[in-house]
Length: 254
Image 1 (cartoon, rainbow, N blue to C red):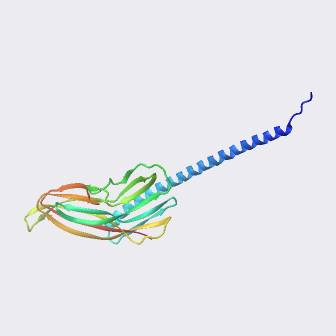
Image 2: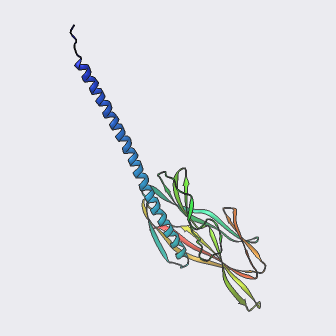
Image 3: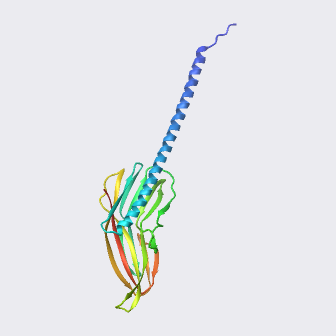
């Protein structure tokens, strides 16, 4: 009996096998390339996030500095490729009460950066400690917070703190006794003209300072409300003079 070997069949099987191997290699390469590209994009977005965070910290310093020097200014450059900068005009209402009397009722604005690439970030304050009444002369009034919404990290600059500082005693000749002088300071951020995207320069400009002086005959409490909610309360010993200072700072693009 004579047997015939089917060379055609063997050749076809070899071709199919090579095609399967080639397809598998291509698929693995595509998947690996996609993973590598995604990893590189996340790394680039994280680098931008850190850069924006540093710029926010610098801007917060500038806001407080120009606020104490009327008509002075400074600016910071923000390079945004993976995220955006939002100027949140009059986003927060701040009310301050001296006992039952309202001594401050203003709206202040915020600056927010939101990254368009998802990655985890610890929600924390990197400048200041949130909304409240601070008693230290060197405490920050403008805060910078890291946050996350649906996995998209963000950086928020706000001015929602009030500072009360004991400035020492003063003799009132008209009354014949000494009083303690307190200074209550709020930095109010306002939004001016904003244009552009991607790479922008954000300018902080000291618009002015308003001063209101109050005489306190009895020990009183100062209460801070943010968007209608009481967030802090401090006491002031009488007799005292309270200088209520609102520092106006405008942020805009240049």
